[in-house]
Image (cartoon, rainbow, N blue to C red):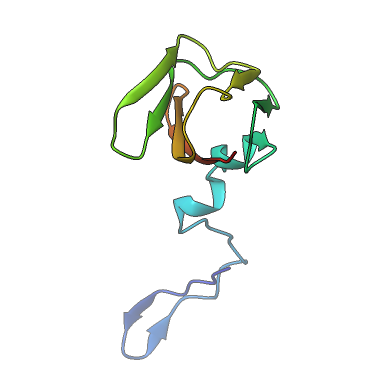
Length: 109
């Protein structure tokens, strides 16, 4: 919130303006895409469920902790069978039109 007044000379100033509201940070309008994807259960033994508000996510990769792509899909799936994966940490990487989103998955036995 700001009010502005111009100083024309040492003895001459304008009246104050009415209150003006400005957004000085683009962070206020940021969408938290990471919260738009829920994965459960995590840690997971067999089936990882994935839910979204609207599935506008494209290419999705399941990546192991060494950076190797284990599986890839053209669209974010609703579930992933992880029963044949070894115990460890994995990452689900997906994209939409503007953002890359990464979710950490823990596979246990």
